[in-house]
Length: 218
Picture 1 (cartoon, rainbow, N blue to C red):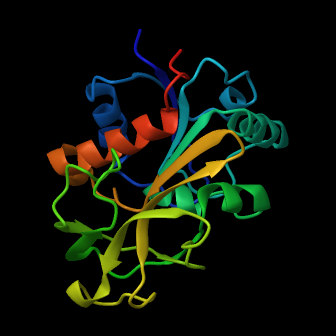
Picture 2: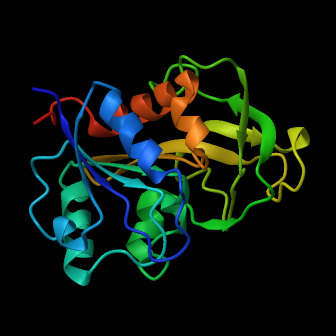
């Protein structure tokens, strides 16, 4: 049986119109069974049957206190967590979430083409990508540079687009351990077109599969 994902797309702030395309893409990757919800009560229920929980362009305060406690306990005990794009614009008032994800969104320049530099050529999220990957996105800046508390997989080349605000070291996708759990985050995925791009789909699927991890496929 394929591992099961809980894909959560609740928004309490900006809502991306790419969410339906993103959910559809996860359903068609073939590696996972997908339960999709925007109901915060779903995060209050036991999460043990899921190989990973995916926050897909969530925004604002989307969890209840009980949901926060359940998610934290799930990850600490070995559950997987993946954040996509605006997941970094989520739960600003919950300090644990900022630690879990690795960094919080600060701002972004205009949606435009740019270059992604791949730092880890062996990770499932990035091993299929060229060393320099041409992509179009919003190129999120973060409030702090997560390097040092995360394993950086890819960085943004700010010389390739206008308006970057983090300088020469601009992490864009990374992974980390939280308790016994695994966490993957990618800042990419603003537009619906991204979810039709084979390279991005492989990036997303590889990262989520790593977060789901061996031995937790239920």
